[in-house]
Image 1: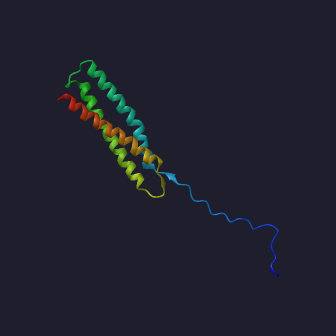
Image 2: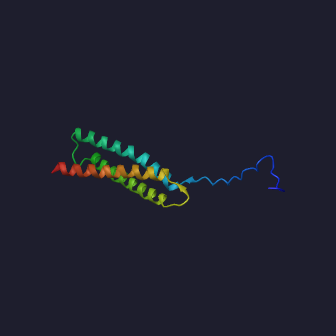
Image 3: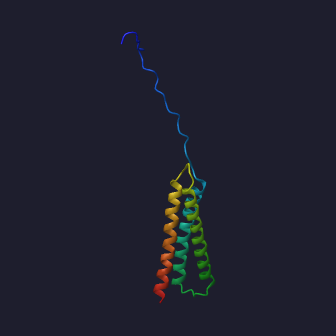
Length: 125
């Protein structure tokens, strides 16, 4: 290889430009926050319902009606959380961690609540 000169040191390696860091989806974070807030609240409502049952509160008691209203409202919040999580999973170019966590936690709480309602109706008959 006559006529070719090789430098003493290799040329600097070409670095690929860093990919922009993906941000968390706002809807995914909202779904996760809903699950973290509404989940323990629903658990507390079920404990309160158990205490009311132990004290012999009737079905027409205002406290029992409040428990029913709170259960329905919190189930609605979990349904909204599931919708937000699904919408966040459909967003391109966003991190999916909080979306998946929100979907799983909200789904477990909603399915668990529906399961407890079905169990309660079945035991009443």
